[in-house]
Length: 304
Image 1 (cartoon, one colour):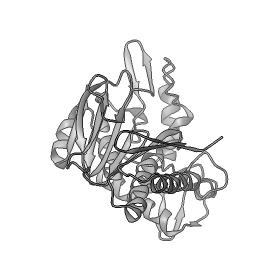
Image 2 (cartoon, rainbow, N blue to C red):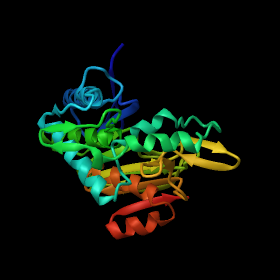
Image 3 (cartoon, rainbow, N blue to C red):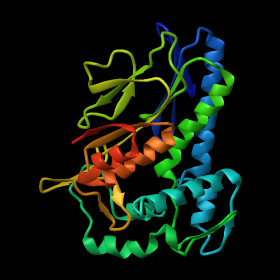
Image 4 (spheres, rainbow, N blue to C red):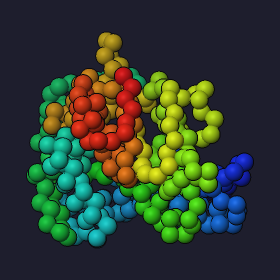
């Protein structure tokens, strides 16, 4: 079966494929189908490369080597080092609320829509295995305490969007929109000077989709001319017990979901990676999400 599909819309080409457990789309304001297909292939190959390299679910990549190093230092390549540097910066700037070592919490949390909230003592038992400040990171070597793990899932998809945008911008000057499961980047205005129409859906039903006729489905729409957009929310991953909804955004300092968090936060920023981290941090700020985003000076939409 083909791994990509390409169809011509009224004034753009739409390419599709699956990667990083997400539907991926590439909207291209091009007249040339051969060029559109070439760009789609580049996007597909780069997304799969990043997924293979940084997925925590594989046993043959750098993340597996780091997570199974049993306290021994592991040397990493320049690309991985750049992501680790960024993760460390996010940890410091967020005062520990964003932490790529917190993935071990998935051992007790299963956000499957059920009412199975883990016992407090099982969460507490995992906290000693969490903390970027416990890691020794001296380029190019990283050393984890035995039992600790890293998980780049919190920045991996957004990073892939930005990487694809960089690669494709070198190949074509046309307006492009990259959409990996609701994480977006637009390379520039469309021919008419406008942007790509983005619809933010009700958190009860979905997250975010691009297109030209979304007003009947979206709770709000906006035009994206250039830059990144990312959404964080609990539409698909949550628990519900005794009327309390537990979203999947966990505070690594406590092991519990963020309190009083919005149902969803969508942020527009210069890059998709930056938009993604700001959306996640806003969720962790809970009741203060809007105040946090106001202080960042970015465009955003919160749904409560």
